Length: 209
Image 1 (cartoon, rainbow, N blue to C red):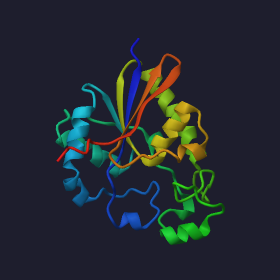
Image 2: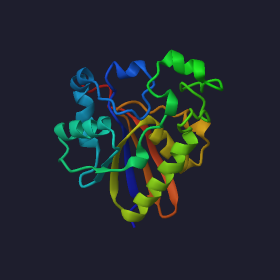
Image 3: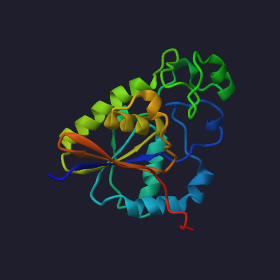
Image 4: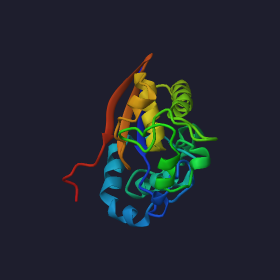
């Protein structure tokens, strides 16, 4: 049987006002200016993704808008399904506060590559281990329901890192060591009992205009 192939894309960069706060899984819009500037990236993704794939987004508008931009760039339009388990980490009571205020509330030193430690759990929110705990079963369910198929998921930095951690059996601290940029592509494959990481954080070639 062919492997089940996952194409995980982090959504486009969000609007400037949202970037001034820790927005977590708040429903914020993508940046209109960046949408126009990143046309080459959308064209690259449209050509890079396999035809006939099943598409999924999270419930948040920024993933749906990113999918729509890829379709507009040339990928044959399909109706994406919604998979809420791939949503971004929920920051609880700390969601929506400024970066400075967020830093002041931390109970542990931040991760070298992230604003907070991997095991930091804001009041009423999630630690990265919680994100891994819901993304892993989502991947397993997709493998069971779509064996041998291609699956595109427009997701978030946190949930893509969680998918990598699940596939590689990494701890949350190690998961934050992956760079997952906006509009980057990460590929996983399920081969009858084993996960294979094909690529992480693929970006459009620099030669693109």
